[in-house]
Image 1 (cartoon, rainbow, N blue to C red):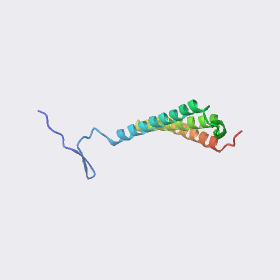
Image 2: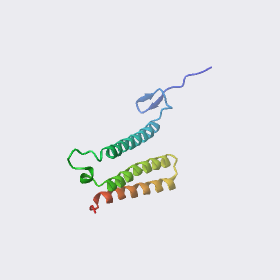
Image 3: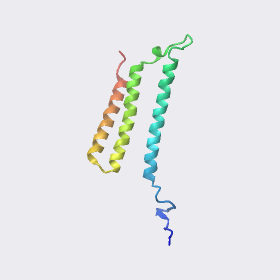
Image 4: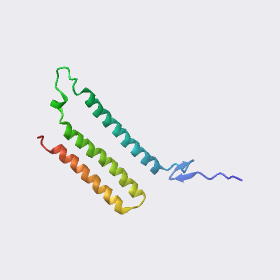
Length: 122
């Protein structure tokens, strides 16, 4: 005989489906955000690659942007977000050594992006 389980009560809110935890949804949301960020930057770089010779007599992309620096900075920031996600996974697994490793790498990549942003152009 199948018996219905009582709803999960958290605070004053009843949850009909306790198998849908908020941590799992937050983690999924983080990775979804990261993937959309990657798609956005890929689209921006693809647009630049296609249109960098078509400037209709106005300033070129080379006049406006220093592409190697922008690429390195973007790469540092995207990798930083990825390593922050790995740190989140390590924290959920309660693996302190890997958590500290990923957080250290995240901070290092963020510092590299800031240094890249603050450095004078060559």
